[in-house]
Each structure stands twice: as structure tokens, then as C-alpha cells.
Image (cartoon, rainbow, N blue to C red):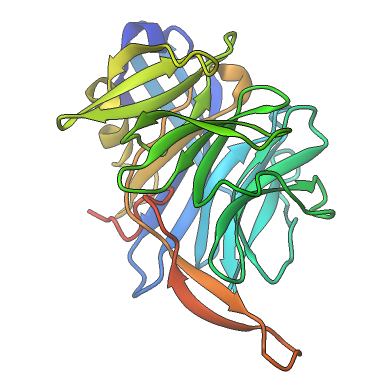
Length: 304
């Protein structure tokens, strides 16, 4: 069993909750990542990580996990046969099923408010990265924000308000209205970890300033930001967790069930992607490898 420490306020939220992690191992040129599910328990500032279960168990890229609001399943990204799509893992049955099957590539799925659809970052044929939505079965794709690109990550704050990590130099935190499509830049030089703050109409994010990374929360409407904690206060969790669960691998990201009100993510880097180009005369699409722009969900090929 793995033990680590958290700030006391964070530790008080822990009680035998489920969490996800992403572990990566070296595998030539392509990242070989796995998804693990486990339990967290804690008392005071001490947290224990229980048994881990590998829920993907295959060679290749499995990444960017996200619990569904009912905590019954996980949406995640899979790269297979030169194509990247969204899959679903059922926590009760242990089954994995493909959700999207498109000529484009989809990443970073998240269930939208209402639970009838999920949104995902789609890398389109011309490599544009925009936010799209799908029914829960992967059908009926719709463009959510036509004029915001390149989008890297997202967090739904309510049925129409989105917090977005938009790539650039520097990256920006943008708040967008899905009905009007209008974005507003609220912060510069942010990390890719965006989360709705439970019980509040606010978004948490990591802000970098002078080499110091600070966890902040922000009111999306007026842009008022509050420092929550320096990022180093959570670094112990990421580093200690990196000693398990898979020998020779480092955990680069954790995702906790929505109901448990704690989310921790770590790691940097970019991941190898596939771009789809349609044959000029029609027929089967032709795919070429490229790298997704941005920090990436986790660092691939990071081993001890």
C-alpha cells in the first residue's frame, strides 16, 4: 500500500474514494500508457492508496480518463490502428467499448451538463483543434465553438459556460458561452488542468508566474481569482504515487470520481497523434502521424 501526505483541507475530503491514474512505460517511439483504478482512504493529512486495477491491459496509448457523473463508467482516449477515438470502461462489468469511430481524432472526453452528450477535442482534417459534442453513444457530432481554436482542454461550469485551455504563447484560460460562442480571456500562462469547483460556480486552474505555479480558483463571470495553494503542496502526491502501481512506471495523472470532490493531475509533454487526410479522389482516408499541439494529458515514456 502506498502512503503520502496532502494538505489537511484536501485530506479531509478523502474517504475510500475511487481514483484513476495513468501510468506510462517506454515502448519505442509510441507512448504505452495504461489506466488504473483504485481506492483512496485517509485520516488527517495521511492518505493511503489501496489495490490498483489495470482496466485497459493492452499495448498502446490509453489516456485522458474522465469519470462519468454517476461514477459508473470512465470515458478515455485510445489510439489503435492509426486512429484515436473515445472509449468507455464499465466499472461494474469491466468491459471496454468503443464510443466514437470517425475519420478524425477525438481526445479528452467529458460528459456535458444534463448527461445526454459528451464533449471532446477533435483534431480535424486540417489539424484544427476545436470542441465538439456527441451523444453518449458517439453519434450526432456537433461543433460546440466554431471560432475558438486551438482548444486543448475543457471544463463545463454549467449548461452553457465553459472554461477552456487554449493553446498559444502563452496559453490562455478562456471562458466561453456555448450558445453565443463568444470567449473571454481571463488568464495567461496557465496549466492544462481545469476543474469545476464543487459547490461553487468557479473554475480551478494552475497559474504560472515568475516560475511559481499556484492553484487558483476564479469566478468565470467577473474574472476574480483567489489563490488556493502553491502547486508544490500537491507535488508530494504526484511524486510518491509515481512509485506504483506498475513496476518501472511512473503515474503521471490522477482523476477522482466527481462525487468525491478532489482531482489531481500531473505530468507534462505532448503525445503522438494521427492526422487524417482524405484521398483527393475519394476512397479511404490516408493517415499521417503528427503530434498534438499543447502540453498533453500526461508525460509519455517517463520511467524510473
